[in-house]
Length: 317
Length: 207
Image (cartoon, rainbow over all chains, first blue to last red; front, side, top):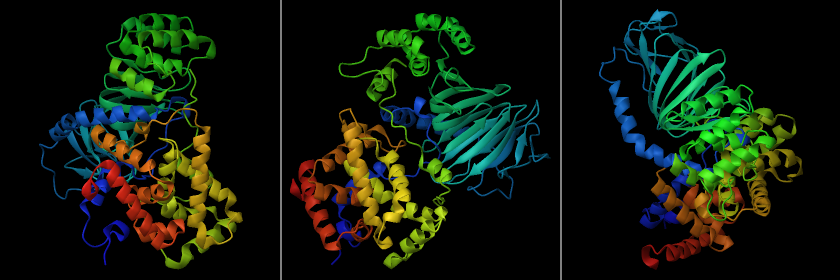
């Protein structure tokens, strides 16, 4: 006699099946990429918020992805399981050859755009991954990994704009000074100097990681590599320009500038303060912490290091 | 501000690399052989110095270990503790008397780690902090957390079996084989546990 609960055979018990479906999000799933360093790991609760953001923005992202589909591919089209590229303007080159119709972009192959060309990279449709990456003029990009666990590009110079619908952490872009790990989002990543890249997130969130630390960058925020104990703190694009200047000055070594950052911070700038509070030297931490708490007082029983505090902070962001 | 709520554990892949343990990609088939042949082969090879051989065992038993941790460990810690369990297993492999019983042995390590983690944690355990897959919607997450919290309140005998069956998707025979229980016991635990769970959730015939 079959017993669906025991051996998963025979007639499906609908009560059991509905519980299986409901609990599926808890199932073990091997991680695709290393987690951020402990000093900047985003606590579990914030993941729920990210999930909400991802869900809310999925339709918008899907619409954006659809934009790149107007041109029919030239036969033979590469399989959907491969990362592919097509020209959007001018004559981008893959392995030195002009890209004609949609072409497969294998690992190790470099795509280059000149000052008048742009290209679109389609991520491999493996599992739940769907995504388009527009490569701006004067850029150089390669594929370093493609598989069910990870799809990774390397941006050597220039800029790319990515819209990705995928489980978090499956799409990664390496750039000078850091690595952008997709958490379900749309963003731009640009090389802005030697060993320096700038990330601007339009929707969802991205984790920008360096060797020593990583930052969580939500929609509307900007962050630059390198990310370490002093640098790589995100800020919102609508922050007071003076705050941004002060933040840069602090990152360049001026401890005094931290006071200006603290003084100019709005409730929304708790994004910046929260990251700073976890990174500044002990001697400076008190003033950052005090301002953080003043702008966003923790609920009773919740400390600023409590993951629940982050959920509350997001309301200010 | 301190990071005392953050567990400083490294990702499995990183640990595997450091220890030269081969963790196969998900597209690779995991050899499944009856009678403990795989386990005996792997244990012998690892003890002979080939630590890369541990990969297939990791792939085979990680969901079971995760399920046990999920049923017992503090909320949100299960993912990180999986790697901890396998690190311990690699370190203590020489103490394993019967390689074919490695599943039950891993389960014991997982239970010990879960207890250690519960002792270590200073915070209370809000069940809604359990780490659900990050891509699910908030409502799915809330529902999954609610059900898991209810399972975690069931008597211990049912808790683990139900998590392995309903969360990790293992069949009763697989649970019995991997955890080292009699199939009959697993069947009984599943049915009694499910009856209680449905009562507490207010679903199905038990309403």
